[in-house]
Image (cartoon, rainbow, N blue to C red):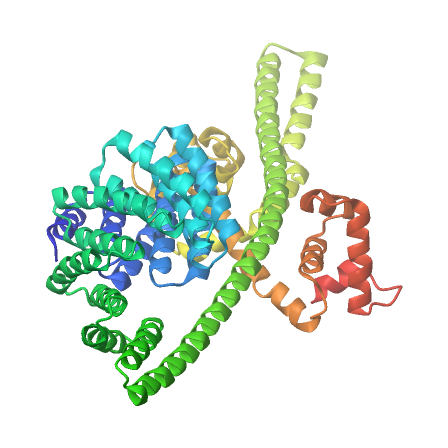
Length: 599
């Protein structure tokens, strides 16, 4: 365990409350992710669960991102994207630009590794724009470098150079030597691809000087290798060999086997150009042994081909042929591996696109359901307040009439007695109260059931108090509705907080609202799980656009609403509906929405 890990472990052990513990857990995850990915994932999931239980929104966002990063470390792009999208939405709701920028960068990295360069670029640019608003120069440089990497990977070296140079300018302004060295290296690589080897060498020399000053031995070996390659491209093979040799010495000391294989291969190529095939074979044989041990088949087939040329130069035709045959086998293997990798990337891309599409439909459904529940809750709260006001008003009238009765006699007294009877009858009328009770139970049914299932120690009265608190009612109003004192309600609230294990700083009403929102979300997820997959499996002719329309029709949206949601014309949606009916082979009398609801 390194000193940083130990320090974070101590901070976690010393956390005095749950919010501090969650922060300490997530800090430790950031340190563990590359060294102990399994534990990092377990810790991040635990932290997220704790944050969700306490409704700590900012911690939930950080936890979602942390779980996503752990899944990305384990090459699970689909799960990583699920958590990134959840984190992104929360950061946006919180107006946390720094958090939003970090997740946009994370999503860009997922797309970049999948070879989805346009989507990666879109997210990197979004990240860069937010970093400009924040004025964070260091992160701006990081984003510019990422954008440069996209163009470099696409072979657009002119554009890559533009972004790398912008990144370098910011790094030089900030004065971060490690970043400057890396940026100089990237610029040098681009000049090499642009066949300006003199300038490539100059940038690599500048990078080397900084890395030597920093004592960055891995960086030094990398720069020496790049300098050697630039020299070799200018036919300065002796100088190139000297640079390669210096790089190889460091790489051997560091135990960098991939680096050693690469440098030995480049040395073999230079020796072959110097017409020293026997020396070249010695280097290439060593490189081949390393590459085969590491199962680096792409390097194997390059080394085999060069060995074939070296043995041919030595007139060892039989050995040259044997190496060429092995080169061919290795190349076929690389081609098959790359084909499998491309196929896997396509599968993951398809899964991501399907997941994003289903999330969009789920979001629309969630928004509509929340809107309906909010409207019903608002109506219920208004009804409750109306009942409270009516009760208070009748109580006031009754008090005034009784005072009047005390000072009245004869006919006035009889009228006052009749008025008291009428007020009493109105107060005892249960029609409005029965309606309120029915609507309360109907609207809060899922909330009441989930709360009583999750917190079994809550009494019926405490659950009722929770339902009314979630409507936004004050203790005084709840007391009036339940026919008890405000002090009784405060006592119930205190007991509920203890049973829910709430921290002092947590608001009870906010916790109950968040709990209800999560239950709505979980119910929707259970309901939506597999719907589009089932529909697609039963009717494979349906296009992605038609599947989306089907899901929105099942949700109950009208053609006009679907057109607005999908940014289409109503005519286009009608055409989709017609095509869907044909593909589903529905009779003219059959209702499309009814059929979709039954799937």
